[in-house]
Length: 246
Image 1 (tube, rainbow, N blue to C red):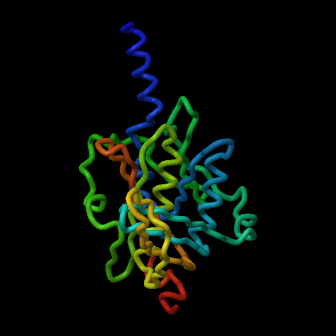
Image 2 (cartoon, helix red, strand yellow):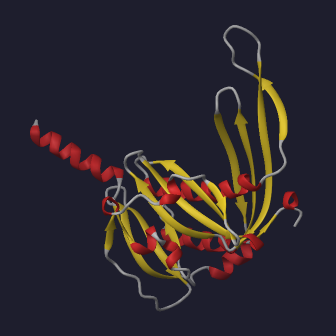
Image 3 (cartoon, rainbow, N blue to C red):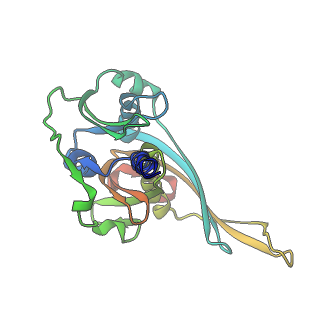
């Protein structure tokens, strides 16, 4: 029975994924020449890196954020479009300079890629437990300085750590989009009240942007809240939208 418990605990720990990461993953902003790719399903981390490289160079981003007032719930839909020509142009031209397993049992890997043929990246892993919690995870998810817009995205940590990291990264970009939105459209939908036929008011933000040079700055795994967090930034001059009149 004891052996079964130890084995189960061992497997559970590995299913949660790693708690140690290379510097280039946790602090990607220090390495502006790399693109980080994630393997998922039958798709390799190289394929993902090629897509992200194109999308983060320039893409059109669309989305809608619905805010449910009565129940304080949020639901969002968003997607990116980038040129298929840019993907064809970069195919096979990214060089891998780093790789680690986020989950050995599920064979999930994360890689660092660059157009540069030679690039020195440290292979040593940094334990999350040895790091203080960064300030940006406790502040507002959208903020700005004189030069950049910043967005923080988060996602619950489940059995697929790669999926959690990718979703948090996407949400960080979407946070910038919603933080800048100035057009709200009120719609009325039927509320689910037990005693009467009250209606619930929903605020829907419809978003359309052209984004260039999206930069992933930092990542953090918060075991206390079982979630991963990602911070991205975009130069203010690289954000275009009819809502911003530019």
